[in-house]
Length: 307
Image 1 (spheres, one colour):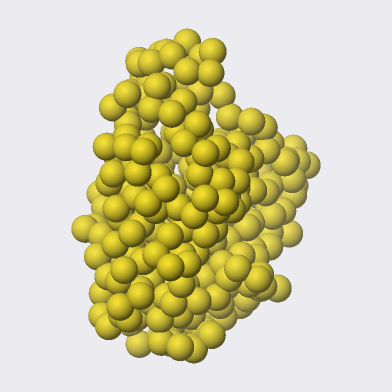
Image 2: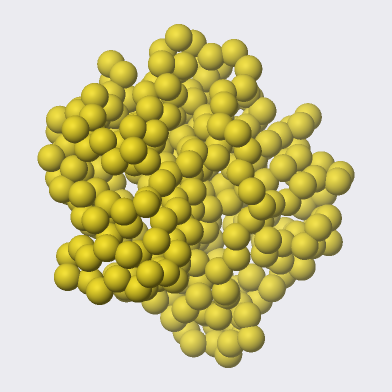
């Protein structure tokens, strides 16, 4: 059953689950959890655009994708952990769980548990999905035989439609942090964007302690390993005190950091982040990361549950 936990549902229209959020939650309950793939036509617009390269075009492509996934994981269930509705767009953090008791991606059943986190972005038209993008942690899926796949290029990040002054200021602060701190490597500016004791939540690979000083120390190591590291915001949503983004990280592992030997390999990593801001600064941060990008650059990833 779909649930949205305490850091979850936000909307820029003042409704807790109003606007386009309800169709997405019904889609998760009816199709994702109910495995009623005959109902996909009720939730996806005719000619919808699918930006997830795992899924072939059209409703038949969706049905084939879901059939293959649930053949491998017959007890698959999906929980919505966080959701933000912004005009005609909805972004949701999701946790996928199931047992590998059927064949999947050419691999025989292993009985291992799947625990996968994704971020899904839907653009809605008349209550149906017209476009869909996703950030998927392929460091988990590749252990079940699914190869990492990247979607098409990003959109220009911008807010769409009406937003409050606070929402626009919060969005500008998040974009500023990606520009100055993450891309220009101005760690001296971290305090301008993050509260001193901000909370960092990372359920996949706990690595960043709370607080700005720990943040600066962690990213100093990242910048040493990837001297040309950049972060580009691809999609941007805002509602009340929340901002959610898709971002792409690029660089080359040419520097020494944390005792690792540089490989010279290219980094291409996708992430999705949710920020809660107070008085223009980040007070809390959650993320979904495709750690396969780090693996491909030559940095080992901590084993995850079920991997």
